Length: 102
Image (cartoon, rainbow, N blue to C red; front, side, top):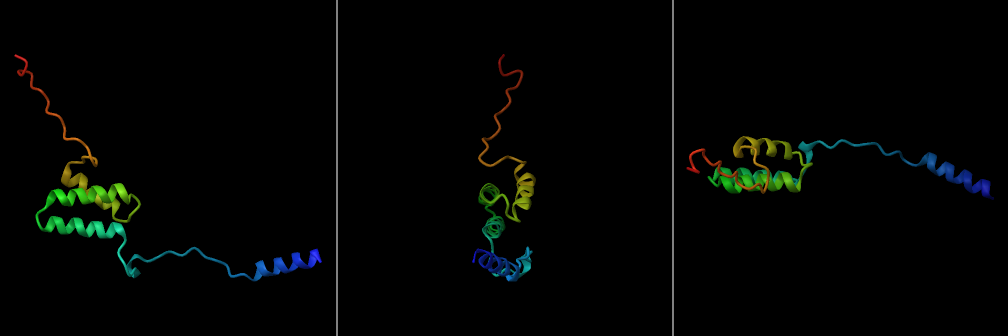
């Protein structure tokens, strides 16, 4: 009896459909990902002249969705437009001049 169950189990495994890794084509998606939506929002802010909101949206995209397909481009834009300041970084302190203490 035990051998029959073992044989039936082996047969079931042998006949089960094999799963293959599937690559998804980004062009065939029906909906935007969160990263895509944030990228579009940032571009919309920029087109309307709201640079601060555009940069804040890019920072949020990079922080919240670092594996998004838009994250590398968002990092590049932040480096180019914001001088590479990391998210939530304080403004650089003013460097005191040599004559300030005199």
